Length: 380
Image 1 (spheres, rainbow, N blue to C red):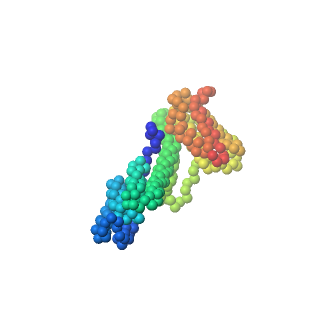
Image 2: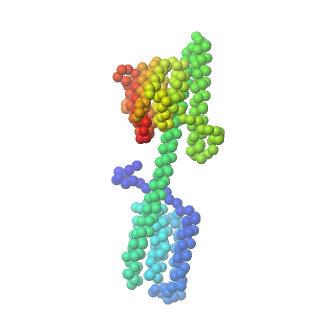
Image 3: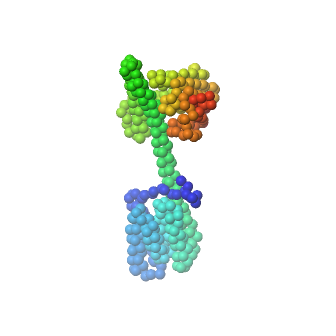
């Protein structure tokens, strides 16, 4: 989300593993060890080397806590690095640059800029005070490069984390949409069948038993589709699903529309299905699944909201697109309180858009409710 200032907040949480902390400490000791054989500047050899050892130990010890307190560690390393650079002007910031780069990776840029400022101060002030200004520009460039490298690494890690989080959210939305499509229609049919059985239970037991048998069949279909969905979710998570060795069940398509509309007759809804231009046609699987789910959700809405008696479904294919037209004779005006209201219609629009198509749903001027979808047969 954008803040009022237009700045995108940095929510990336970087951590430093013990392996990397050990590597940083090892680098600090390894790179500083040769200094013990050089003559320090401004101090006698013995005391100068003792001070050097103390500063090196401060740097190496502080680096171990870089993951927990990066700001304090960076300040301590910069101060110790300043002392080492004063004793050995030709060495430069040394370990301080590595710590500044790590600091820029661990913390947002607005929090790590002072580390860059400290490294630049070491690159500018100490060479002049020690009488060795010839390396000033080199150390300044090195400090800028170190901080920029860490900030760039943080930006790349944050982008990868955001992409992974977005993929998880998209998959959750897809699973929620599939779960809604699988259960909403079948449960709506079951509710209507149960009500029909209750209405005629005493007057016509045979018809009541027929409705109950339809109710049982709808429940079994709901369980079958739910199990298939759960197997898909488990396979996405890398968890072996029961029966995973068996062939995956195919996704429903236009050939399954008859089975979708059949149980509705027992629920008191007469459905007319017309197919045009589908003979000997092979449609993209994504288009067929989207078309099936759109018809399924349209019938679900008819059962739940329309109080309709008849529904007409027309599915027609041309060379370029598949059109779906679902009309009922129910209470179309009360179905929606505004454009796009309702999870079901929003899901149908999303399904159409995923394959590059469009969907319009609303009260029909001729009466009832109408859903019209256009799905291109070429890739979106």
